[in-house]
Image (tube, rainbow, N blue to C red; front, side, top):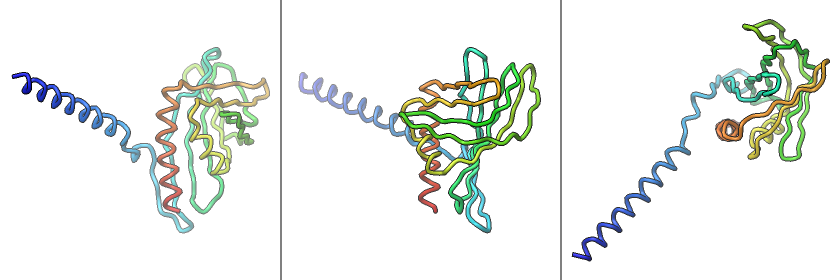
Length: 180
């Protein structure tokens, strides 16, 4: 009788750890195909990472969303971003900061308009693919600083949001590197 109870307890513990292992592996094996698209071009493969959000400034209630376009034959990627703020800011340059590293780039204005009650600025920046890879691979949550004529605006992201975004980005960038 006691032997049967011990066997049942050991089997239950085995099933518990097996189900826990399954849940962890299923969580880590995410489908990244819904986060990007690729297209074969004459001069390489063009990758487009769909818009990502999460960066913002709580004081000014501003938000930033970004998307990335990369052609495998280039050494730079195009980072397009939209900046939403109650005040109109014209962005001159951008810095990506994390792990005591800073990646900076000038930006080109695509347009400035309004969306609901906020100003919507759309900008484009060229970033070295290696720098972009390093930034998106940061484990600690990074900061983005937008330099405007009105002053610098610091944007942060929640650690949980960044963990998910960087995990997906790392997988996509690794896929790009493996297919070059």
